[in-house]
Amino acid sequence: MTRLARGLLYPLIAALAVLVGPSASAAEIGQIKIAKGEVTIERKGETTPAKVGTRLETADVLRTGADGSIGITMADNSLLSAGPNSILSLDKFDYDPTTNQGKFDARLQKGSLAVISGRMAKQSPDAMTVRTPSAILGVRGTEFAVSVND
Amino acid sequence: MLLPEKDGKDTAVVVKQRDAEATLSGPYAAAKLTTAGPQAYRSSEDEVKVLFGAAMAARPERPTEFTLYFIEGKNELTDESKQIVKDVFAEIAKRPVPDVVVIGHTDAVGTHQVNDPLSKQRAEFIRTGLIESGIAPENIIAFGRGKRELFVLTEDGVAHPRNRRVVIFVR
Image 1 (cartoon, chains in turn blue, red):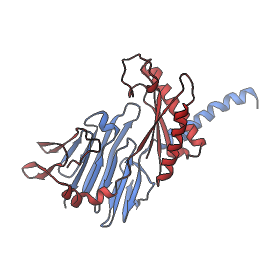
Image 2 (spheres, rainbow over the protein chains, first blue to last red):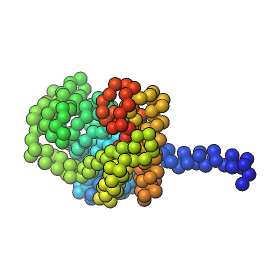
Image 3 (cartoon, helix red, strand yellow):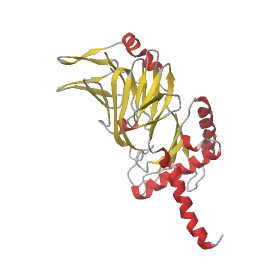
């Protein structure tokens, strides 16, 4: 290979490495670690069965059936788990891992949810909120649970 | 409602319902939403089981944390830390769908502009090593926190070997 060709190729390889490197997972905000019974994930209007290992994205909506439950780990180490007959929306998850700053808004439309908050809530109060149809929970870094009755 | 904390630290949740607000703190602090706003009460282990038993049974295992240290001035782990890498792999093997986060840290010498890339580089070095040892690249991410999270609290500008480290979370 000529010196010139090599000179051209290397920046290209570097650029590709960036593309397939960390940025490939930039849209991912968490992962399903536990799924029992009937659980689905709605993304961009399409609903598919939620499986253990599925990567999550902002605006995903997780639903559990009468025998279903789901456990997810978010990028900032928050742990969320929902019991049967639940609808959980991951409305917003902006996380800067270098500063631990960001915003995490989850919404429990119905059902039950247990939460262990993560690195964002630890860094700044008000970084995480959980909404229900009638209330907003501001999280100060804690373990808590919330339920919405029909 | 608040669940008892593993580490017993003081934390809280603020419940807002329209204009009314209740601050929950302490184990089993809870609030019910009523037409008159949030009503605070003290819940119990039994009530938690009834309301949240299924949700809590689906809780993912907590991330396990490991800390690796470098030989001073070198891009090489201490012997002790090399042993810890084995524990990292043992932990990964235990988990059904493991993903790994590698976080680089520096000591308090220098600016963010210097330390942020340095900490990232430290984390990437470990990430590369773990990938070479068999972890799938898509299951491991690396980033740096610079000097923002000192393990040993020092004044700015102070060198400290325990702060030059990489923290690994297996999740």
